[in-house]
Amino acid sequence: VASGVVYEGVFGALLTGPSGASVVLKFAKVKDPIAPTVARTTLAEKPIPVLTIGAGDLVQLYAKDVRLAAEDLSGVDRSDVGGFETDAAISRGRGGAVRELQRWQPDAGDDSTGFSLESSGAGPGWDQFAVNRERFGVQTTWSEHFYTTKIKRDECRISDAEAERIA
Image 1 (cartoon, rainbow, N blue to C red):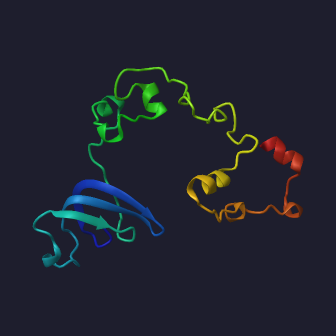
Image 2: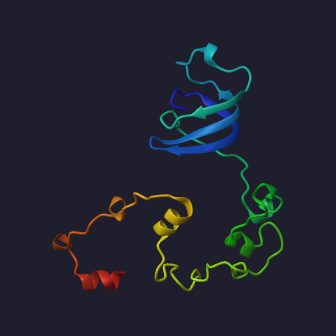
């Protein structure tokens, strides 16, 4: 950390926010009390159950003996997510035998036939805001102007044709 104290512990989480990334260590203890400016009374004798190091104090993070190869992850218990795996993990054979991906088929009576990899899902008459209003009584305040920047065509350095070519 910025004071010069070095902690070691079990990595708990990486918290991201507007001020940067904070690190949570579990069972943290002072590894190397080298900073002369830190009073000896502030150094922990017992491990700290949960220590959060804020973005402003974090200087360096070192991860030791982290294994992420497929064979290392194959025994990971995924029961908490119902055996969920990503397409990439299935294709690489992580977590079990290699298997072919299967095309999704809607359940009987499901009116989701407009959704497929071959279509945009935004067929004629589709209005997600109307569906949310009808099904859940939700009135949206969404406006694309909050998420986009209006292009000032008179200030563009390239022509529409060049933009189309690049796109």
